[in-house]
Amino acid sequence: MTVGFLGLGSMGSGMASRLVQGGHDVIVWNRSDGAVAELVARGARAATTPREALAADVSFSMLANDEATGQVLADESLADAAGTTHVSMASISPELTTDLADRFAEAGASFAAAPVLGRPPVAAAGELNILFAGPRDVLETARPYLELMGKRVWDLGVTPSQANVVKISVNYNLIHAMQAIGESVAMVERQGVDPGVFVDLLTSSLFGGVAYTGYGREIVERGYKPAGFTMELGFKDLRLAEGVQRDGGVTAATMPALIAVFEAALADADLRDADWGGIAEVSRRDLLG
Image (cartoon, rainbow, N blue to C red; front, top):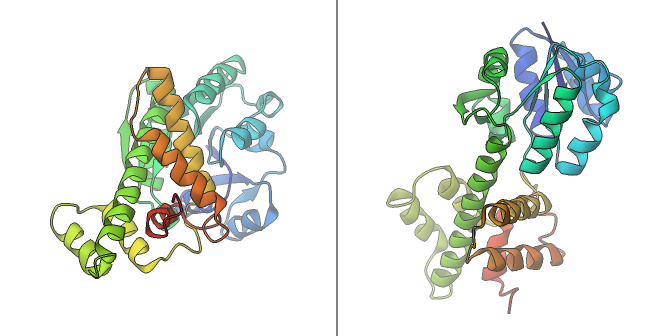
């Protein structure tokens, strides 16, 4: 079987590399040529258009946002997709996922959503958590490839948009964790306490796990550049959470405050290009004052 992969950014390159390393015939497409050349050097084949990559027996996409996903997976790109299977792995809105499922069905193709949890080094190591939702036959078709890209495939049901709702909700929790670390670090360091010791206490006692250990260290060291996940993309995910809350009739007390934090960070010349963990600096620098 041929495998298409569209979107070779910091995450997609590592994911596509796993498929190439697994011995599959992988056809890759990306807007810029550099990442394509790197994958071709490792054994992939280059697609000149999204249509060509989507004509593979099974294809995956990892694109930046709703706009990019909608443009790349446009109707004209699905002209040769009849009989194929596609899995969108981007963090996009549930609404777009539902629209894509309908359009792939109209083209005679199968569709599922499988956004991921993990940063670029995790993707390159094949250790992602993959949040899958879609038809059962798509899951079985995609599973061998998903298992190359991730350490666990979470089955979240047959409705593709549910995977995006879960991914958005996970990221909403993660934003809260980063903001909580930033606020509490500001509290202790203003009173002369070493923030490194404080975060070590958190992660060694009540708050273990990737969020607090990884972002806690980043915040203590102010190691926000180069960005593993940009401030702009973080704000995009927060806005997606706002939409999920609105659609579900959920009133979240913290949402307005978090929006204000991201707006302050994006307005700051030093933070706008930083990793999204840099929202911690909004409290440490009194940027909301």
